[in-house]
Length: 357
Image 1 (tube, helix red, strand yellow):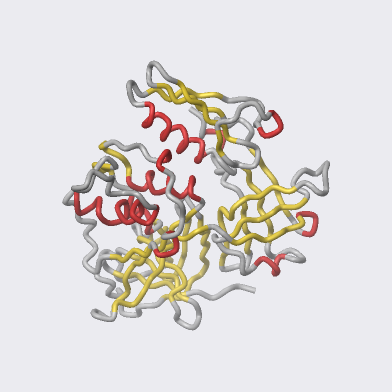
Image 2 (cartoon, rainbow, N blue to C red):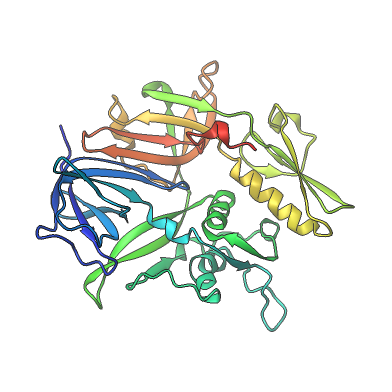
């Protein structure tokens, strides 16, 4: 049974385009991802007016907007238009001067909480760089869910450098177990849609017995799991443990990952900066597993409500031990017009074999 959907194209002021503003989808496919960019494609009857398209919206059969992305360039062939969406979080994919060393008049750093960190990266850094993302209706951010998350000073490199803002956001999400949710809200002043980015914690847990599901498992053991921060005179080594935590104790062999893959980060006369880079890089190496569960299988419906706020405690992860448990966050949720649905735990990219330099 197919799942009906409608496509609407909007200009950068959220004005719907076309004589008929909603077109029935011939087919569509959507993969939402926690840290990487979402993937969205849709095909509908030829769009007669798409040259000013900025956003593409997927509407349900009741007309509700269920997903939105930047539009890309629609392509029309044989009376059908195919649209490939670009994740709205790519609005943060900008190279700017990111300054973590800024201080207040009392000498304290300006950024001392997780909420302040995300507010800076998602808003303030653009103002400081006099850079306009050129959305007339702008966007809102919501960091209230992370106001109580403990800030860890060693995770941040207190320097002023040109950095990619999206990369910095993803790094912070990796080490603090967070994700950025894209919402579309109605602006009451203009009666038009508006983007809202919400920083959310991954805090829920669900136990999943893998033998009850149609599950596919992949893992990558060839990841950097030991990093030494070095400033020319002092050294400090961090370890990624087999429970995906990060620490400095290299003597507890039961917690260490094997084979050992070691890296040195050198910053002359800047041990704190090297330590921050080490922790952040190990954060990106966490959860390098991939467990995909078919939600159309026998017990798949029991996981329909699981979203990106969840860790899965995957029972029987090691086929040789039915009681083994692997704790992994939700990585992606896939659905399509043919009603096929799946959920993936872990953060092993489809291109994991290219990740290591």
